[in-house]
Amino acid sequence: MMARVVADVTRPARVAVNPDRSPTARSGGRWRLLLWTNEGSGVGRAVSTRALIFDCVVAALFFACGSVFLPLFMPQAIWIDEVFVGLVTMPLMLRRRLPRTSFALILVFATVQSWALRPIGMHDAGFLFGLYSVVGFTNRRTGIVAALLALVPTFSGALNDWWNFIDISLVKHPGLFTRVCTTTGMVVLVALAWFSGEGLRSSRLLQDALVDRTVRLEREREQQARLAASAERARIAREMHDVIAHALSVMIAQADGGAYVIDQDAAEAKAALERISTTGRDSLTQMRGLLGLLRSGEGDDDQPSAPQPGLAELPLLIEDAGRTGLKITVRRRGSERPIAEMLGLTVYRLIQESLTNARKHGGDHVEIDMETTAQGVDLRVTNDFPAEGKQLQTGAEPGHGLNGMGERVTAVGGRFTAEPTRDGFLVHAWLPHTGDGDGGR
Image 1 (cartoon, rainbow, N blue to C red):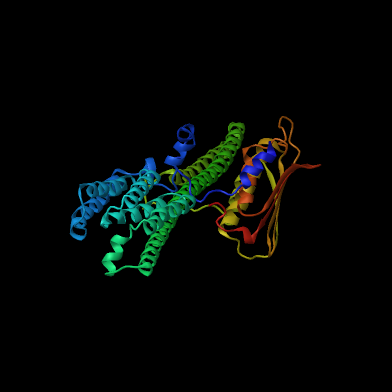
Image 2 (image 1 turned 120 degrees about the horizontal axis):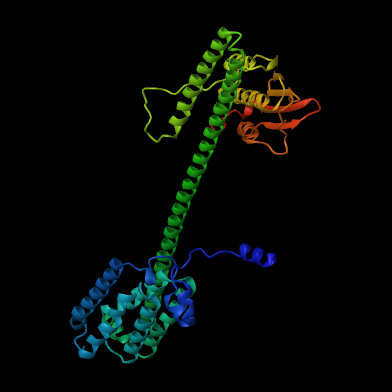
């Protein structure tokens, strides 16, 4: 089964797909398939009403020219010749709807006219136009067969003196040389009609290919837009998670501390309430900025969104976390080279989420070790074993916070691990300077 699928995939595809090659057409048998199968679009059942009207006008012009000029150039013409004018030109109305049928009818009537030795007129140019149409609106195999069939009336006219109507108009006493020249001229006209039809077919295939490419590019553009929108939603979701989780954990810790000391130290309880208020306002400001990104053109351009936090806000973050009971040790080493805004935001969010997880699942001691080198930033955040009543978050079933941290690090081209150690839990991230980019911003 797998081998069959691979074989089907590797088989070369056709240049153009026939829209009429449907199960309905196939169910009608080989002849119905031959009747309706065309190359490209705008042919067969897919032909437009405007194209049908144009083909009827073309057939009418050939009929009118043949009817008017035949008596002028061939005085011996009679009523049966007017019939042949209609028989040779009227099938041109189907040259796009049924190109094979149209050419077959013209070929039969032209051959009958040649063997009946009826006068040649301008209407017989419809034979060449029919060849041009069947070559241009079908496939190359059909065009080659049509060209070979077109030589039948061409050479039969040389054998049965049908070309004599042209020979006597060229010279007074035609001979073998005149007949050879006339026949050669007709072969050249057939070749010109065939090559013109090939040019039409190639231009139609090129147009269909360009249309398909435009549709494919438009589809890819829509897919890329959806992917970009999905990535932006994921980024905003990570930001909202970090803001809400950190703010709520700080506010809960401050509220618990305030409730514990309210009877013994009213001033400390008041300070805890003020810190809760400050944290809530800051978080609300960040939430408004994030929600503003979700609005489509409804934001207030006069009120710019608040800047994203970075390394400059780390001291305030650590100070707020320390007020919740965490004992935090910070070690910063390495060069003082400037860090890109996106990289600074990533470091800030990683530390923020690590402190939040430490408050919820870990112990009271947190160590933050950040080393800045010429290649990037190496960040390690370690917290000890949780106190009694808490459960250590493991790497086997990570929550949304750990997933969000991993996505942030991946977005800037870094590496991320979060796993329990012998002494607690370790969050380790390597953030290269070269991976700053937009980082999914």
